[in-house]
Amino acid sequence: MRCLVIEDEADTARYICKGLEEAGHNATLVRSGVDGLHLATNERWDVIILDRMLPGGVDGLSIIATIRNLGKTTPILILSALASLDERVRGLRGGGDDYLTKPFAFSELLARLEVLLRRGNTTEDRRELWIADLRLDLRTRRAERAGQPIALQPREFRLLEYLVGHQGQVVTRTMLLEAVWDYYFDPQTNVIDVQISRLRRKIDKGFSPQLLHTVRGIGYMIAADV
Image (cartoon, rainbow, N blue to C red; front, side, top):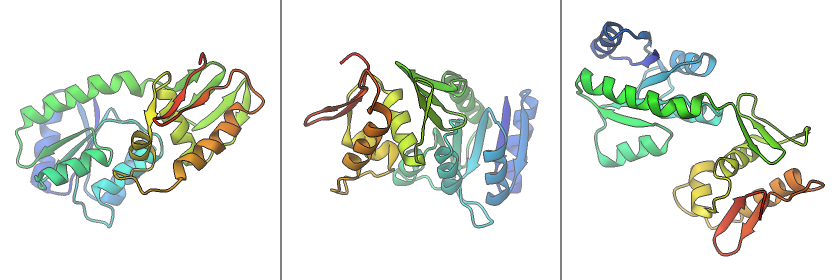
């Protein structure tokens, strides 16, 4: 297991890295948010162990947001002395896969990493999404239909990725707001309707079958056989 450890507390960092190496894993340590962000976004890791509060002007949640906005699905275990329920929820909703509070036992940390790695193996190796003749390349963040490139803005790609990842399922406005816009409330705007309309023109106009469907009163669905 190739682990990136982003932790500024020297004793905690040594404790984690020593334990990982004794367990047969490869641990790379950085102690600032800036260095952590650089390595997290420019190299491939099996798992990232990330402290919430970091020096250097870049905190843990900012690192997670950047990683997820780039489409990376690397499992992230958040470490933090912020132990309240609100803080744990904030970390998980911000894109973390698990949240472990300090102080902690290394045996628990290792067990949680192993669970994340098993879970991550089902998604990290997935490089493409398909429905009918629509293809999404998750590495390059590009889309094409019937071999023709489709120009998508980053938000449009995230929206389409979420819909295709849930193909055949009805997704609600709330689900889209949380997954694509990172809103945990309804801002009472037509932002979703506008983006869906633009996306429909790009992926369906001139193609058959139509893939993007409105389920009135509920939400939207990507499907090829409706």
